Amino acid sequence: MKKIVYTIISLFAVAAASAQARFPQPDFHSGYEYPNVYMPVANQALWQVMDIALLVALMSLVAWAVIKKRTRKPIIWTSIISVAYFGFFRNGCVCSVGSVQNVTLALADSTYILPISVLLLFILPIIFAFLFGRVFCAGVCPLGALQELVNVKNYRLSKAVTTVLGVIPWLYLIFALLFAVTRTSFIICQYDPFVGIFRLGGSIGLITFGVLLLIASIFTGRPFCRFICPYGALLSLFSRVSIWKIKLTSKECINCELCHDACPVDAIKPPYDNKVKEDRLIGVKRIINYFVILPLMVVACAFLMRSVSEKLANANKDVRLYKEVIAFEANPTNTLTLELEAFYKNEGNVEELIALHEKIQSEFKLYSTIAGGLIGLVLGITLIGLSLKRKRETYEIEDAECVACAKCFSYCPQNMDGGINSLIAKK
Image (cartoon, rainbow, N blue to C red; front, side, top):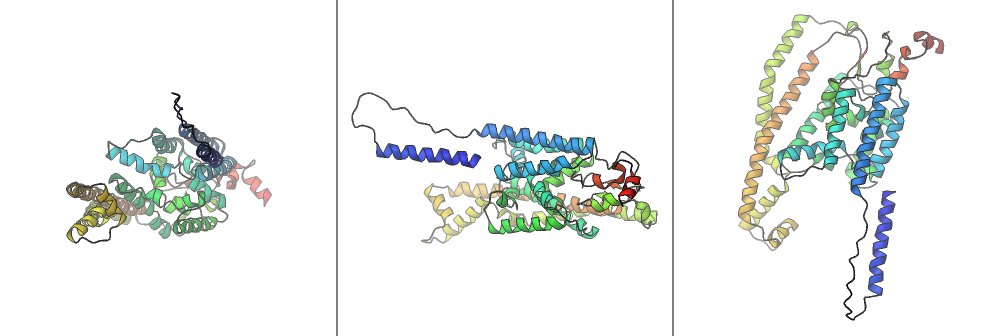
């Protein structure tokens, strides 16, 4: 609808310009001054208000559905609305996932003005995650909603595979923050695999990647959300300590395993009583070793990232321009790249460019070191997490991993009228 409105406005503008060319103003002076003509444009502020209002409304609906009613139907409708509005109508550009980069840049650069709408897109899903869990991921996020709507089967991946792939969102988040804080690029937006689908055009490589993710989503639950999305990793921290947690049933769990089999993201963990127990002393020793190794991993990764900071800085356009200018100054040629031509036409100052290059390199050294430390911390905590085995007597939802899709509710016999007896009767 919005594209149609823009098209009509553009056609009127062209028609007005053509009319002015065909019927020029009379060539005499009467003292009359022709008024300036302004073409109306769509009110972007109004669209932003609608975006925020719909975001809050949909997250509230999902929270009500999963916390209060334990039903899935509202999740399906939320996913459809999100894909239609935030996805295809808004072209996937109203994005809480990418807003983390804007917020990071605003914190590092006082000259960058952060729009209030972008701040709200960033902070509101976090607030809801702290209150109710990852209700944003359920179907409000168009990226997750699109995967949710195509999901048919749920082939379970091994724990080793999911553990390794589960580290990727954190690494992605760390590098996204690194490139944002150094004003290099917004890689989350640049490599969004679904934006090409929503815009019905774009990079062939990204569209192909997005299509492959959707194909994978048919057979396993939300591969992008689980193994790529950096914002989902951030929300998982707040969901872990959410105030109102999602519960499978208000009744006593009977350990029937149906919810575990139904969960598309493997967020429902089985009782440990069914596992072969390890000697407690062995487990304690392993955890102590990991805690000793953790600082070493942080330092080693920080040193490694600092050592490659100059190569990482090559992603910055000003660093690349500096190298081109220095090479050209040392060996002038008749052929100029577009960047060099623009630099010299705008009377660029080589000394200022050198100073800017040194500043960027210094920033990359600092922030790459911090990023490396965070990478070591993530790897260390992942190892420690594999060693921690909290005793569970029933099937429980892992709050950090649960995306509030509500698929498990209908599989629990305790949520049916009559409980287990109804399940037996159905069989």
